[in-house]
Image (cartoon, rainbow, N blue to C red):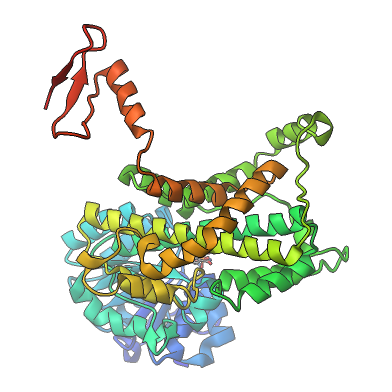
Length: 501
Ligand SMILES: NC(=O)C1=CN([C@@H]2O[C@H](COP(=O)(O)OP(=O)(O)OC[C@H]3O[C@@H](n4cnc5c(N)ncnc54)[C@H](OP(=O)(O)O)[C@@H]3O)[C@@H](O)[C@H]2O)C=CC1
Ligand SMILES: O=C(CO)[C@H](O)[C@H](O)COP(=O)(O)O
């Protein structure tokens, strides 16, 4: 440990510690504290700064012996502790607190220095911040970091966006602390300015969809088939040894096995059924709407969390639309439990594939809109470890996107391996959605992903009728199937057609 600050008082940085740190962390709460420890354990000399100095002191008291730390209690000393180019990772609350810290660093940093925001920032904020930092000659890197508390310490998946030049300094440091899969660090230079936070946003959107699909699977097995949480935990543990192998499936088994010490009931039965969210899923959907890219599974997951918190209408509807009134009561007549469990597994696999396909489509659309050159195979590879959506089948996604982007499948569902997966699963997927609907078990993510898939497959969509309606009430024009151009029917006149473009 290198510690200049005693446990309880603030002192200026001794001269021998000036320029000693190769990296610094500002914000030492759950994520920042663990990231600093991870950096120190991997050989970095880490300057520390937190708005409330007690947090820095606590970190030093508990973990100061894990590596080389240089604790500081002013932003000026923090900057003095850093070797050039100074490199600082901000891990504070997203939004205004991040802007506040950037302002402070901008005052003490010099041209060529690097500010990394590792928080869950909105990518548009990152684009703005990068442009402002550039005016001061600073590099600004928006780095999505996933893996939660444990990942920050043991190895997260890291999605940095910023200048290529800054990545020369930053890349090796991030590679030293990232999770590793097959010997490869789960970090890649995603693109310029907001690219990293854009990709992290979509990661979180996929996380929402995956969790919702797992939740719907649980509901089908629990209410539909009358299984206990412990039995369903065994099902998820078994699924984790199939193509569904993933962190979220693994932790689902753990949650379902947990018993509440106070009541002796399964913990899942005493947790209020109101899901929280911090906003990244919502941003994913808002952005997808702007890009006109359907992310239906993610959108349904966000809305399902919203619905879960609508206590008053839920209670009123529960009282009004009862079984006594002729509504289905949420149970299924399951005669062959093993076959039903397998059908739900197949449906989950198919719908999960659609969620990932939609997420990757959004990244592709975002890259085209914002001018980023994003390697989709590399993104799949860095999501294989460290992050919340890590999953065995990301290897297959990476393989589908490997090679010349011009040869990439138009949608992941069309990659040969995944198309065969859908060939095998689509029957079960339809059965599950149909039975759930008849039984009154809500499966919004299963159903919307199936509708999306059928939309992709349909030779004709009712969009043709929508165009006709738009032309009738607003002269919005339409294209024809048989020749180029834009056309309008004179609906209020003689109903002849004119070419308008
Ligand atoms: N928690 C998680 O699982 C994950 C979090 N993230 C992101 O990482 C970032 C850090 O998350 P987490 O560790 O959970 O901490 P929090 O989001 O709870 O933020 C707490 C930290 O922010 C600092 N802070 C708050 N306001 C200010 C301010 N105005 N000026 C300076 N510092 C301020 C706090 O300082 P003080 O001690 O003085 O209050 C503290 O260090 C967030 O952006 C979060 O979205 C990303 C992935 C996963
Ligand atoms: O970023 C994360 C993982 O990568 C967090 O786990 C995520 O922010 C959780 O989001 P929410 O609170 O909205 O469910």
